[in-house]
Length: 257
Image 1 (tube, one colour):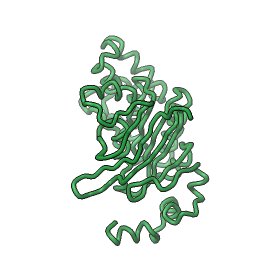
Image 2 (tube, one colour; image 1 turned 180 degrees about the vertical axis):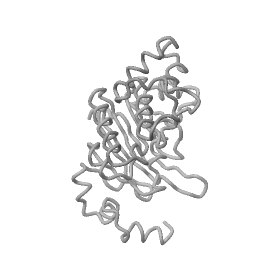
Image 3 (cartoon, rainbow, N blue to C red; image 1 turned 120 degrees about the vertical axis):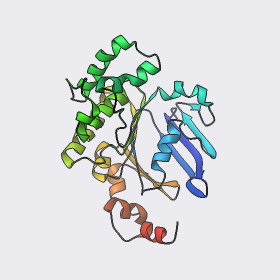
Image 4 (cartoon, rainbow, N blue to C red; image 1 turned 45 degrees about the horizontal axis):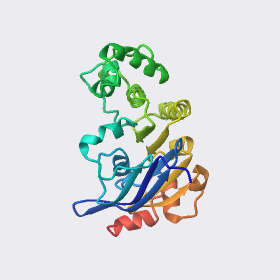
């Protein structure tokens, strides 16, 4: 079997008395686009933070491109993180910096480009997301959709091997959501990256995913193509993808699980 890009093996993570991951297992191949679905608080964003080394498991292993990064010292993590781009839920732009500096901030910090080269790099990445001519704008001048696209330009600036998307379409209207979906697909195809997305938007999930996996009660309980997940007979999966008020997820919450 070929080496996976990302593996989570029996990962457990708790915050105080709250158990979030309870033996999560996930394998993502190079070049795949995988979408993680699940209810609020199910551990989706916690999973992303394990992949990029912002959190360490209480138990289990995290393997990145064949290397066990589970207990990598913080001082050695930058060489891992520069291989990963991240699009945060709320874009997370620096309000005091113009667009071009937001995009290249990480590159300059890691010594990957000289300040004199940064503007040209930012223009190149902005062209990829359809925002030519926006390099000198401030974040406050951008719409929600434009901020997401700048955040995507920043995510791809260091030519990452993996891109993590945390709720990429949250807060956007249906048309702009589909613009972001198309950009994600185009980015994956052009750059050949492995992508991992977290979303509650099932329309977006079905469009951008090669595979969809579902987190429930700390474990991945479903793994399949978009069609397989959307037409699943599993009552938990079915309730979630249909957005139904009644079912095992709701019953479990009432029971305090």
